Image 1 (cartoon, helix red, strand yellow):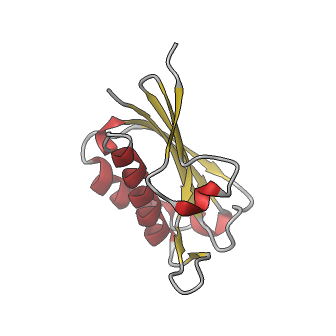
Image 2: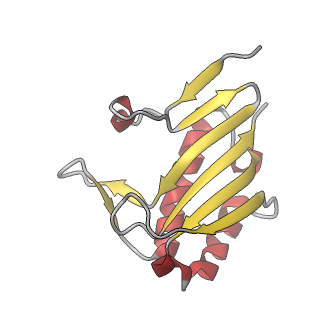
Length: 134
């Protein structure tokens, strides 16, 4: 039986949280939901800026960073789930270009779920992913 391994690309804030950026078990990598929140260098707090396209780009950059820390890449992602707020839904189709950029022609299975709101104030989208890594 393979051991569960926490994957953290060195993000300090996860030391005080009760969940991990990702967990690997065997060849499966489960990536926690990533939002468009970025750390404000002045305060250290997470702040959400931009429209749904900008937030999607930030979320996928975080996912890519986690994948790289696990020795994987975007081509290893087999499933994503997008959680979209009603405010983000009106421009959600525009996020397709961001997915094309990150996945090229190797699109994972995907699910989109409309939620009332997300935990981070101002967040329009949060994305979680599952990857198969060798």
